[in-house]
Length: 361
Ligand SMILES: Cc1ncc(COP(=O)(O)O)c(C=O)c1O
Image (cartoon, rainbow, N blue to C red; front, side):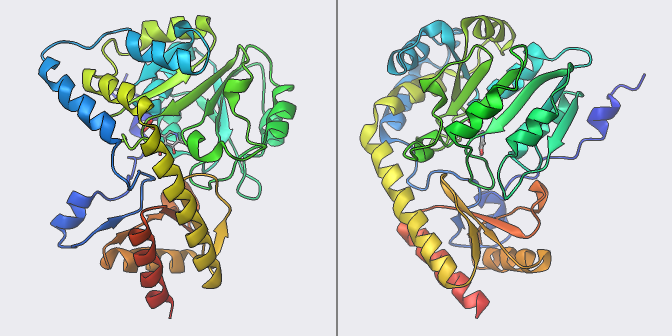
């Protein structure tokens, strides 16, 4: 038997958006990073303060059960602490879910070319994953429901999706849910919930709970804490009890717990973030369309542009990069004609548009 299982050997490495440090090493200056759907306003200031205060305790292990933050989240969402799990980002929780529930011939279902972080973890599980093509850049829930068999254990839905920014409506989810047996776990990844919640037909999964649905959310996006690695999930207490046995015992870290607690109280930061995003999205949408660049309507903190050819998308990405503007070419996601642009500050957005104008003309 090989030391490394064949399904691991055959995995390709995750290709992240380029980091500012990496680009600086390559001699690119004045970098505008709009590639990873981070928060351009920075981290929540209240979180920074709390993190600073927590530093004097980092010789201690964190609270293994995350009592304070789980209680605070439970109170906010009117559930019990036993329905809440914390993780090193929502990806940390996805990883725990894989290790907790997958067994022998279990299979997974998700959309093709959706969130790459899920793909990495699903492929690394060694289980069969049924990747269902999207329709009009949206999850095709009907086709996904048709794929369910006696082997199906987990269905993953990113709502809104990354990298398209599209969402499935409450009505669509309800119709889909009727076809899913109760023994199948549905992961509803709502990493961009705060940005999408104002859509009237967006299904905030916390307003209707099912025993086989786990909702995932994060402090990485709207709260600006991507580097801290803190996310949370809500589910039936039986699911949470078992996830708690499998999660890495001291995940999340002590400073992540402190940051998360404080971020939840930073209402003005959240408001500023949502308002920056709204203004920025409208600006991008208008300017890109007036340049004749096709966009996919998004309810998240990014906008995906669709180009005529793969070659054109590649050139635009490279030429923007040379000017210090880092956007995400979606080739690794399977959308080779698309470029995703995260919504930034007014300054970042204007700089991106003016540079694009120069490139196109
Ligand atoms: C759909 C989706 N889920 C989860 C994540 C990761 O969130 P976290 O930083 O909490 O692991 C992202 C980040 O890009 C995402 O787009």
